[in-house]
Amino acid sequence: PFDVLVVGGGPAGASAAIYAARKGIRTGVVAERFGGQILDTAAIENFISVKHTEGPKLAASLEEHVKEYNVDVMNLQRAKRLEKKDFVEIELENGAVLKSKSVIIATGARWRNIGVPGEAEFRNKGVAYCPHCDGPLFAGKDVAVVGGGNSGIEAAIDLAGITNHVTVLEFGSELKADSVLQERLYSLPNVTVVKNAQTTEITGTDKVNGISYIDRESGEEKHVELSGVFVQIGLVPNTDWLGDSVERNKFGEIVVDKRGATNVPGVFAAGDCSDSAYKQIIISMGAGATASLSAFDYLVRSQVE
Ligand code: FAD
Image (cartoon, rainbow, N blue to C red; front, side, top):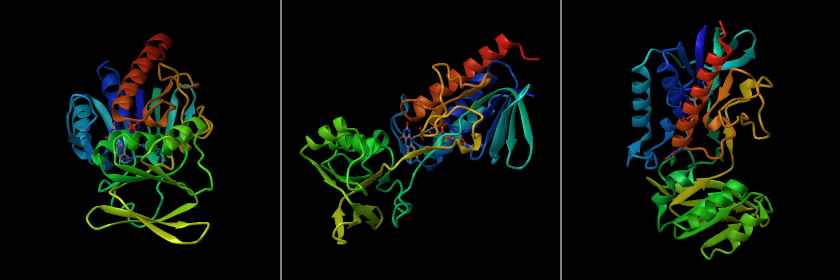
């Protein structure tokens, strides 16, 4: 068996694997797609100490760093079941069952898409999902936020301070965000809120130049000219495969303590799949390190044979 088996090969998983391997213990990584979300990212400017990099370049560095160590990397493999017996068992979609004394779950998350024409085409060309990451790219420009929940309204408030103007498009008849956020939003001079707005298309040529929506009350089609669209209709953790084997919150995020421990002894979690407060590369990497050191501590203390 492995001493530490990491499920997921994004920033959290890579960090966890390196920290484990540096203890000289038997370490494995199972990843559906080594690199994770950063493979879909263009510019990264908030990975501290690196002024600017590109997602695929950072993913290649992650892989290179992991491969410096004796880590058994099983790429393009998807985990489908976790079960705690004497060891923790991870069953893969190909039928193989891996055993490990401890497991770190780092399966990340994915942004929910609107699924309209232009969204995929203009991804990283005006269509963005993370205001902390891409907000500054739209300084002084006009943008829209799709989604009127807490994350959408937080994004709109954040972007209002950087951009020229923010249009919030909410599908329902009311914003769903907390009232304190709504009050703050409505106090801002450069924000327009449109309710009952069904986004139909993100338009552009080589990059985004506008957004079209149907006013669900009047049935009228409208178009707003702008440079950026932030999609904020939910971040979904990749944790369905766990079923009830590990405690998750109502959003599906794995519940962890400050050491990254889950409710199952020997099972840890880190990064976007967990209930950590914010979802960022640097935060995921830190959480991966924490979970890995905790797994090592667990192995020492439990002295599993
Ligand atoms: P992920 O990166 O999601 O990695 C999850 C890993 O688990 C992947 O290898 C995946 O293939 C694997 N996996 C999933 N399910 C399974 C399974 N069942 N079995 C096996 N493997 C599985 N953050 C920043 O800090 N700065 C930025 O500029 C920035 N820009 C972003 C731009 C975009 C377009 C996106 C989508 C995100 C951006 N983020 C940015 C957020 C950042 O990418 C994430 O916070 C970070 O990647 C989370 O790392 P993670 O390791 O927790 O998860």
